[in-house]
Length: 309
Image (tube, rainbow, N blue to C red; front, side, top):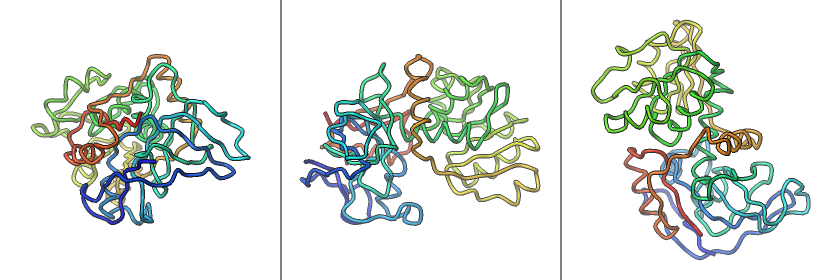
C-alpha cells in the first residue's frame, strides 16, 4: 500500500510517499480502508520532533491523525463493528496515522461516521471536533447563558468550538484575522474581534471561559478578561498558573482523547444539521507534502483534507 511517512525529524521535506506493507489488525483492532484524512497542527510538531515528550516517535511513522473510511477487517475480539461499516476517529499520534491507503487502530477509539456527510467532510471532524468538545464541556464546563471567548476561532478546532458553544446556548466571542471576522460570525459567533488590529482585552470582559488555542502572550492577556471563578482551558502549555490562581481563575491544559461516546455525539449533531465541518482545501494522498506546507502557514480557515479514495 501507499503511505506518507517520515524516517527522521525535520520540516515538511521529510514527508515522503512510499510503498509499505498492508497492516494486520490484532485482536481488538480493525483495519480501515482509508477514504480520507486531514491535516492538524500536531503534524508539524511531530515531524519536527517537538512533541516527543507527549507523543514519542518511532520511525518510520505514517502521518495523519484523522480518519474516515470503511472497516475491511477486524480482530477476533472486536464486537462493535462489522465488515463494511463506515467509521471515523482519531488514531493515536504515537502510532501510524491515516495518510495511507489502509490503517489499523483500536476499535474502541472509533465511531460510526456521520451519515449525512461524505468521507471528506467526516475526516475533518475527529481530532478538531474532539478537541473543541472536550475543551468546552469536559474541561471548560461551559453552560447555557455563559460567555465564552474562543481564540483562533476560524481554524480547525476554533470553527468547531464556535458552533458547539452556540449550540449549547452560550454567548460566543471569537478572535481572528480581519479576513475571517465575517466567517466567524457566519458560523455562530455573537462577536468577532480582529486580533491583529484590536486588543481583545479592551473589547470584551466578564468572560466565564476562555478557550485558548494559541498560548504565550495571548494566554496571559486572557486572564484580564475572565471573571473570578472563571476558567481558561488551553490546548498548549498552561504557563500562567500562579497569575491565574491570584485572580481566582482555573487554568488547565489538556490533550483530546478519542472517546467514542464523544464522537457519537458529534456525529449526531452533524446529522441533525446543527454542526458543519469547515474545509478550506482538499489534496490527494500524493500531495500530502503540499497539504502540510499549507498547514505550516497557520492561516487556514477550517481544515485541510487529504483524499485517499
